[in-house]
Length: 380
Ligand code: NDP
Ligand code: MG
Image 1 (cartoon, rainbow, N blue to C red):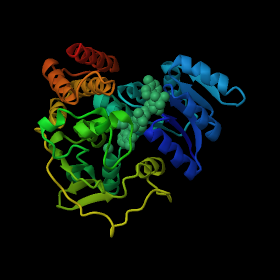
Image 2: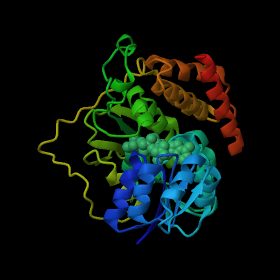
Image 3: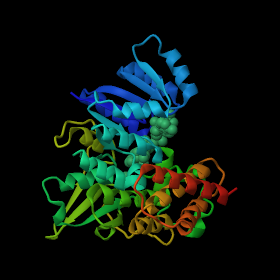
Image 4: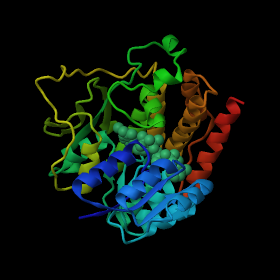
C-alpha cells in the first residue's frame, strides 16, 4: 500500500498514473494541475486525495467552491505546490509536470527526503547537476518513467554501471521520418500533433516529431545513469517495441521490450524492484511487425544534433537548448511561428549564448528566462 502524489495529474502521464494507482490499490495523497479544474474535480471525487493544488489562482477558487461538499482541501499557486513537494507524509511523488517548471518541485521533494518518480525530463536537462547531486546526498534513486530510461533502468538491474559499454536509446523517428527539410516547411500543427505510436501531451508530441525529444532523452540518460555522451547512441526503431538497450563490455546487449503503453514504466517506477500484475497491453510477438533499426537523420532534424552538442558542451548549455525549444514549441502551438522555426530558434540560441557552468537553481532559471526572451524577440 503506497501513498502516491501526482504533480500534473490532468496530463497524459498524470491520468495514466492515476489509472495505475487505482489498479494497484494505492492511495492518492496530493494531486496538482494548472487549470483543468473540470478534470481535477472528477479526479478529486474519484480518488479522494488529501489535497488538490491548482497553480492558477482563479481556477483554484472555482474548484474550492465546487468541492466544498467533500473533505478535499484545495490550495492555490506554485508556492502551494512547492510546500506539497516537501510534505513527508507521502511515499512517492510522480513528477508529471510539463517543462522546466518541474525543476523546483523536484528539488524541494528531494531536499525533504521524498522519493521522486520522474516523467518530467526537462528537470534533468536543465538542472541535472543539482538534481542528481541532491539525490545522491539524500541517498535517493531517481526512478525514471520515460519509457527509454525505464527500459535502461530495467536492463541495468543486477548489473554494474562500470561494465556498461554504451546505452542505445531507441527513437520512433516521429511522424516525419524520411522527410526532407523542404517537405517539413509546410508542416502544420495538426500534422505534427499526430504521433504514429504514442498518445502524449502536446509539447512532447511536437518534440517527438522534431527529434528534440530524443535530444532531451540523451541528456536525461547522461544524468540518470552518470555516463558521458560518448557512451550513448540513438537509433531509429520505427516500431517502438524495443524501448532501449544496454550494451555491456562483454558484447552482451540487454533490451527491454513491450507494447507501447506508458502504464508499464509508470507502474515499474512505483513497484521497483518488484513487479506487479498490470492491465497493460501485452506484446504479441507473432503479430508484431519486423523490427528495424536505422541511423537518425540529424542533418534534417537538427534539434537532435544541437541537443547532443549541448550535452557535450555541458554547463548551462542543455538548459539553453531546452529553454529555446520550450519557447519555440509554445509559439508554434499558438500558431505564431512555422514548423522549421523551431529548429532555427534552437540553433540560434545555441550559437548566441555562451555555455558557462552553474552552481544554483537561480542561475538555471535566470538562463531559462533569458533564452525564452531571446526566442520571443527573434520572432517579434
Ligand atoms: P501534458 O501536457 O499532457 O500534461 C502536463 C501536466 O502539467 C498537466 O496536468 C498540466 O495541468 C500540468 N501543468 C502545466 N503547467 C502547469 C503549471 N504552470 N503548474 C502546475 N501544473 C502545470 O504532458 P505529458 O503528460 O505528456 O508530459 C508530462 C511530462 O512527462 C513531460 O515532461 C514529458 O516530456 C514527460 N513524458 C511524457 C510522456 C507521455 O507519454 N506523455 C512519455 C515520457 C515522458 P493542466 O492540465 O491543468 O494544464
Ligand atoms: Mg521517451
